[in-house]
Image (cartoon, rainbow, N blue to C red; front, side, top):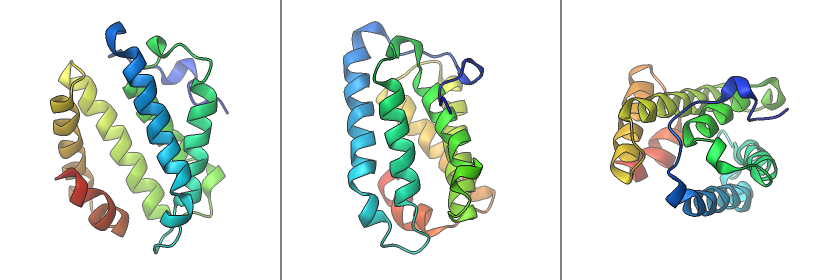
Length: 151
């Protein structure tokens, strides 16, 4: 399955001057998820294998793509859709659903910000976090894994 089908493309592109940095951040983030698979799998509701699989798909599918054509919003949305797929049916439904919603909200919030910057990303992440918490996602991945580093 191609993560980056034309149906999933969303605007708000990275400025040309930041494409090299964008690629490095994307590669580094994916590699961290791959390298931390076994550590994440030690926790309750382990999802390290799911995250590593998606990260590997992102790495392989962005390798030969022009990142000028893929906005961060497209990647976030595509990963959210992929996490909710049947491929990960053995994973915790609350982790899959919560992460999918968080990434979709983050994509939406970034689009609403009209710019890509550290400040807009942090603000969008905080708003997205609040939305999933209001919906009732209280999985340990959120409360012990993500939330302490976002706030």
